[in-house]
Length: 349
Image (cartoon, helix red, strand yellow):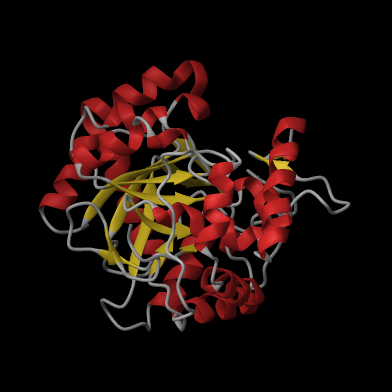
């Protein structure tokens, strides 16, 4: 069991990341517009906190998130942050882009479109394009974005073959020559993580929502395989699309996996909320801290859309949760009996 406050290593690399990181999808205007001023103040608040891991992607606002993250980090002290972005999509100009409408879920003014490309040339171009958008000379972690059957369906084998036959070579070359320090995936599914470990050495997997207060299946196959392989987990989506942040007692429809939550999930969250009430623990705090009980989880990176959200998230991360709370969840079979539990500690961040 490892303290949730101590920096954690990414795989077998030299990178050490803060256990609470910054997910920058909202900096690409996810679902609604965020002004440049608000984006700047949000990122500044994170930089001035204990966070050092910043994750972005070309997909987030079709380049907008990368531009904003780069602008914020450019004046930061070199070595004070760890930056991850993603490959697998190439952005190209789109003169007919309707920037007044949501595109891929983003209210972005960027006049670009994206297409998938996991080849050697595609990954190298994506990497170079990201450096230009970021306006930075260094990317620390390069993640292959949205590979796998959940995204590609019938074309899964086509794109997987691209990565296996040539795309991984580009990642390995960039790492071997020191241009990047770590290679990984940024995905929502477990199975693709298992598959790619047979291609070559991966240092980390940014896995969204699959290890949480509601889901612990990776404990039994993926996590042991990652430990043997030398790969860490960066945990995105700790609130499972919102239901573990909002709970189920309010008037709004709770969401799970990007959709209205099914009854069995609502019932399970209601039981967890009952134990939260018993111990006066906020559900969102428990959801944020729980994944860090496992030593393989290097960082948890919720999406942070404004300065208030940054400060509130740090508060949740600092909340002292008694060991008895976690034990009660286990006794009521609300979390896996094999799940390592987080430390209880005084607020020290």
